[in-house]
Length: 497
Image (cartoon, rainbow, N blue to C red):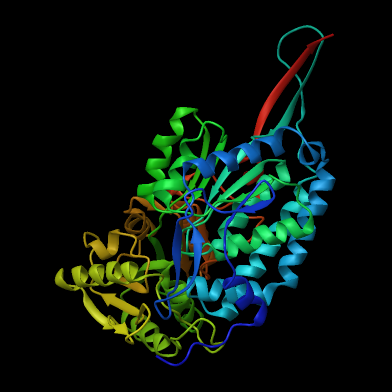
């Protein structure tokens, strides 16, 4: 566990060890306060770099740059086809730099480098490729009006304007792409605000954007604390829309802050995703699928399968299988290509997860496996399964954001009954259903209140599929054609002939 940190490539090392500023209006600048924030490798707890701590005055400059690029200049004059070609160049550059970007994401976020390359970088590039095609296909429609007379009526879709794209620490590249790709396709301009915990890949994206030729001011990156830079962005009257991924608590604050100019807001917030295992499930596929659903990226995934309901006829077999699967995970530094499970993001997050675990055990939950911290350095913990949980326990209701799975058995064969248990949550982001009965699967999918429902799989993402949540899991949708709608305004035009 406490083995030496694997070496970075020269390209990744050169970038990480360089001085990091803010990217505003096509220039790299210091924050006006010149204050910095330590960037920590969560696998060691050591500081690997420093980022600039932007304040409200820096945000003012970024908004002005984004507004100028949106209102006039080369970006404002580009056709959709021209924007699409530029987005394609950006995507191809990400693919070319996949190894370097994966290393940056691995050491900054604590995720296995192999997963970072094929999931984070691979999916991000795919998202940009997908929306490069949309850029030339955004249009309105002609409308036949109801009133008598001769009229020519039509609609136009126009970019919403300057967008604050605020991404969390668990998937910086991917969740920035969810916002940046469609907003660029529509012709908006962006101010990216990454988490202060994981700003490195966003800063590297800015370098790549500059290299492929995005005009100054189209993409800006402002690093800093949420209470300073983030708050200034969501309150700023020059920002037309906020696209945010993060906690429910912060999402609610953003809604309140956005009322100043009634800016548009989309929110992708928390989840407590249920996994429902019917008695006829194919356990050879289901058990590893369940384990992957909760332990991927240490459970630090908004859609992680954190609670599962399994028929009592197979309850013990499934629990034993997941516990056995957890033993096959190799815990270690993300830069080690053999690692399949890295650390939690911070000491605070580790303490939070362990606190929930203590609450669960105190409430009567049974520890099936795991439950402890791993090693003396870094923020590692064991993959953990709790059985005998009830719906009123905090471990069953709160988003833990760690490698902790809660299990409940059920006897009632009614789909309505198991759906009611799955829906007993303030969240509604995702769910999965495991069964050989395709009819039961689709009936149950209709009953589950979640934005994404997966059948015999979990955590399936594709840029063509809309993504977002019911209830307190958010507002609006990212991805697919739905994302184009969220970054555009509709104008109705009618002429009397």
